[in-house]
Length: 138
Image (cartoon, rainbow, N blue to C red; front, side, top):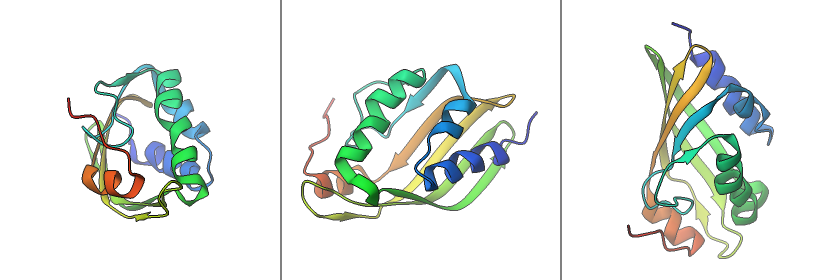
């Protein structure tokens, strides 16, 4: 079993610099990425693979929030091959000018030094209010 906290810490440090390279380097080719159901960027199913994650999620964050988007990590907790992040998102939606600062939890499952599964939990209603984008209902 690998200590996943340093791997996930590098991912968040990359996010702080606006660099998803550390994330991409840590992803297993068959990674399953789950956004919180009904959040602004949710498409109704999981993303599979790095290309789907970049195109379906990260390529949409910039146009939606610009350079205001940030993930603030309060703590990382290792539990076997799983790392849990507790923190907050921060950003201002470009379309509405509304600020967003919901709590967030991320669950990262690793096999060796590769991320094989991601699950996000956050307040989807706050995303809808801030962005003006109504989440999918099914």
